[in-house]
Length: 204
Image (cartoon, rainbow, N blue to C red; front, side, top):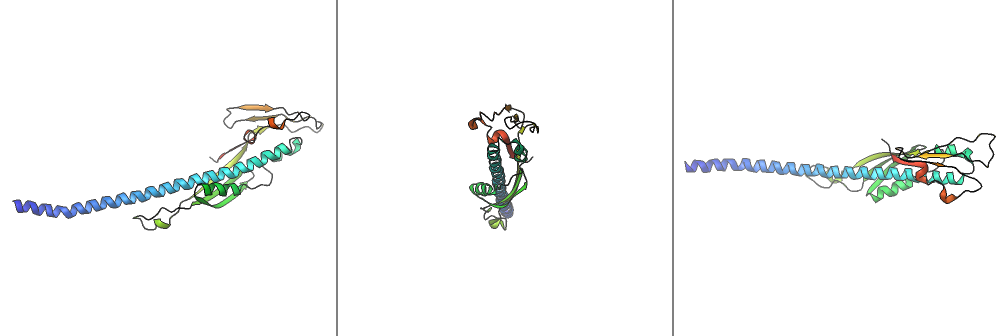
């Protein structure tokens, strides 16, 4: 009976090797999938940051234009509607690079909206899954600029010595503030900041 027991053990050994080899293959495959997921998350982070950077740059330009034209409320509506030239894609490229990605596309798809697409600089790397050594993750994101403030356009019979009240509030209504601007005593340091005038966030 003892020789037979050794014979059974000899037959089980190849099965054991096969099972272990299969488990190792699955482990390496899951590792490759995990690496791809990390790359994908990195690409999405880079895309989000790039889109927000482009939108924030344009927000700052719009806010600066509002300060420049604060005494001419006839121009305010165009500013808050985003109807002014400007391109924040250079900032999108900077933020993509800071997140180890390349900016593939950037477009101001509406006066108050940017859409970007990026590709990671690093590939998934060599793995048991063929082709991963050249595989790079792609992602896209859209950011919007949302005006926070309302005002009543001045009536035709109102002189230049009266400016509209600017009423602004947080995106979630967590704060509200009114600015009563006096053209004869205008403190530029007390004017609303860019983040008071516009909210920037990723599209839902």
